[in-house]
Length: 306
Image 1 (cartoon, helix red, strand yellow):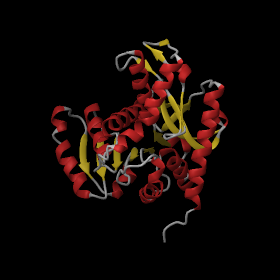
Image 2 (cartoon, one colour; image 1 turned 90 degrees about the vertical axis):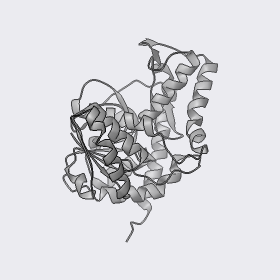
Image 3 (cartoon, rainbow, N blue to C red; image 1 turned 90 degrees about the horizontal axis):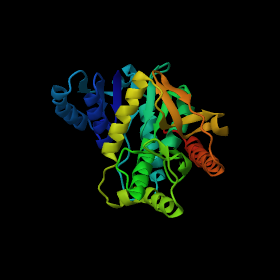
């Protein structure tokens, strides 16, 4: 599979490339405004192939995007101390606008959006490009992984044993599914104190992270998650992934992208999985859609650069 990582000179893009090469036969090209960073990572990753052969890695240019089966949009404005991913909206929309210009009409691949605010940018990209909604997917897996960590901490359970899911917006309008928690495949209900503690840990994660002013995002988690989702796009299967996709009647919502359960395969989203949501979760998902739709509408209202 040919994968072009736009923003491949950054931490998330380079981490995704590293994990793709470890996974096997992927041909990866790193595209970045800072060409020297893409070249640097490519030179380094060439030696990864000595330990995990089968793929290829090189730096590239915008013209390489058109030949990719999957394009990962991971570029973004520099991280800064703030309280919401919406702080990057205008700067990152300008970057995504430029990146979308590299995708030709009729391109048959899958666009994996990682740039934040991801749900609004997926919605906006779908409106701007007309690419089939099932071929534009927003990366939101980290929310569910953080919920699993938080639940495991409350239950004293080792990592990897918890199954838990977060839908909605990748931001303040997240929708944790408290009634779908499982440990070793068995349903588990948190008591009110444990649920409140887990929710507080999850809800404060982003603010605690950016307050460190480290200038880096969740590089390692995102890179591994992106690579595994691309693997699912290649092979298909029954595995369920949380991801942001523009809805068309699913969950009673239309014309806006929010995180929902998906099955992936060649060509993008094979199925938007219909889960029965309780009243709290259904209301939360509808609220997330209103938030995301409003942000995307604001982007549509902005004049395009001359």
